[in-house]
Length: 302
Length: 335
Image 1 (cartoon, rainbow over the protein chains, first blue to last red):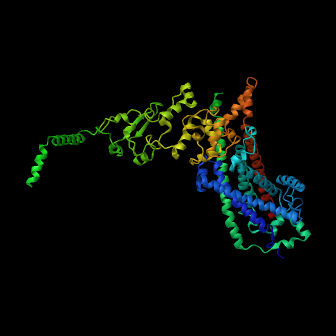
Image 2 (image 1 turned 45 degrees about the vertical axis):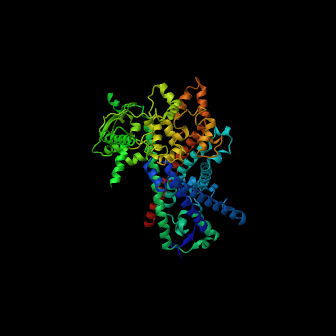
Image 3 (image 1 turned 60 degrees about the vertical axis):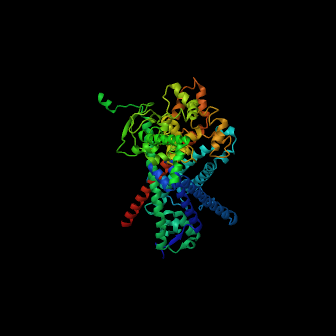
């Protein structure tokens, strides 16, 4: 019996391709875009220079944006194909869905109880609730970034869409800049801290969760992490169909070789971003309190 | 031989030719002698000045007091010829004494304190006149602020002498800082916008707008003035220099968004306080396109804080939980 060494298929080739495309485009976008937000800091200016400076970094940013569109197009084409041609609606509703299900609400409540040691951790389905949040925020974020990015790319053409009487209240390029900048902070901060720590750097996965690169996952891992999914597969008798050869050590090495530098770059980025935000907030605090003369030694006057 | 000498004597006997030769000899002698006795009969070449002014051991630094601001600075009198030739006045047909006119008759070493260079009277009277016409200059005169001279803005990077050309990158970057030195709030809000973000990185090429590209170079009028470069009619042309086809909606762009500026919120609070006295003030602030930007900005700040606080706590708790669970399992395994 293959008990510990048995391996299951978790992600098909298509999903791994989508993830790789997203990785490449996302890193390109963040590395060329984030310096503009932290323009006052030396690391931002350095990084902008490394990425090719003024016209070059912008062009890389636009190419990566187009790559993101390719990834998004592939995703929606896949959704359409699965639901319309294969008549498989499982991805919209049911245990295999990436959308929030009623059971997820129960899982969240159960997890909160588990945090405070008031119960056992609920058994999760194929996708855990925070993975669903990540997916939905990726969809929402891509939509916002695409729309605002296009407005910033073609400011003259986009402002032609609104009449000038409206434009004196609604300034499209400025709104697009605010949304693009802070949505980017949200997305980059989220992916580089929460997504990395939650999926890749969990105590059992450190340094990377190779499932997204090799597509394969240990059976014991699935049983432990996604109990409900495992039980369901077992009952439906699909477990044997998911069994695959364990990934070779070469594939594992290559996926680490790709994953570890990306993780390092991402964690460094989030470190720089966080420290810069703290410095900015400290500057704001000093600015706000500079007219406040509070003599700490006055307590000795009593 | 004899016949040749005969003809020579014959020519000398011709009094007209003789006179001509004597006069021309005299003049050429005069010219020759004068070139020895004084250099000042003709204008000095730049090389005459450069004999000393390129050698740091001959000329040294000098204390200069700015006659407008009263600032005292130590200035090197050494001329970097390469920098000078790259500057706006570095062409072949410029002479040092064109500007330092009080040295025209001096020779060799000259007295140390020259007159300040007069850019306006003979050469640049047009920009000076338009500068004085602008609301920028007239407002300063009204308020009793000392007007800047040409040299305040048109100053070289190493030496004030090397007047930069208009497309000089250092000059373009320097201009932003010079304008921003007084217009602090506008400087911060410019840096908060697209153009300012890129120029903050040190990329100040002609394709990215600095202060002067929108507000004009010498005739700086308030942007509410219809005749200014940003007046309703002129704005389309001004923006169109870089954004061809800029329309009526495009020129409504908020180039100085104040949503990250404490002063903006302060002025809104003050206006809110005076709502009884002057309800128009708060209306003007709310009605501006800045309001939507501020609301969006604050919403995003809230979203960022909530997201990271919530997911951060979630992650810490789930890490702690799984570590404790693992420990329990191990204990039960061993037990």
